[in-house]
Image (cartoon, helix red, strand yellow):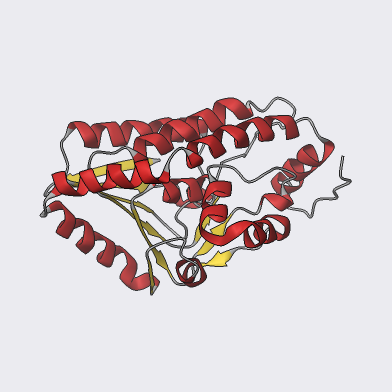
Length: 253
């Protein structure tokens, strides 16, 4: 599921489950965390995150998950652990985002230092169709970059932004043609790895302090909200409709 390659001081973490659009189970979150720890122990000077196949990451893998017994806090705790690992990685990090970047996939991008996206990538969290609430730090990102009105518009409608729209709105770094994305990201990571990485990490830590605890506070509140919603009829209906590939019938209960 998770591949790690290290060469010339640059680590590449690859989400490698293209048949499920790189959706992440709890086990896969742990594998990713282990890959980042291995890369850190190897002393790499830059890291690239990307996905195989048609997507970066379509979110959580809920195949076979029963909404009645789903351990939401455990899964979201795993998401927070991984996002902190990514955010605190002691070298510049880059993500190459193409195709779907949804839910926890969006969280991975939020935690990465620099995000380059394909212009036609699909970015957001269509939780409106699941009877659940946006998680993985999405509230913090959308409010911080877009303001309350646009953030709630996207949440209520479940609409996705293209990569080009996300960059124009200030969510991520640069948008480009998908065929250029991986090479461009690799080149930028190589440049960073050959630069004054101690200075880069000092800047990274300063930016984190300026940003404050908003992201982590949002993650904690999202986890509490998601667990409270798990017992609602709409949450069960949204989960089951997604698994059965049909349109949900929500009642507001």
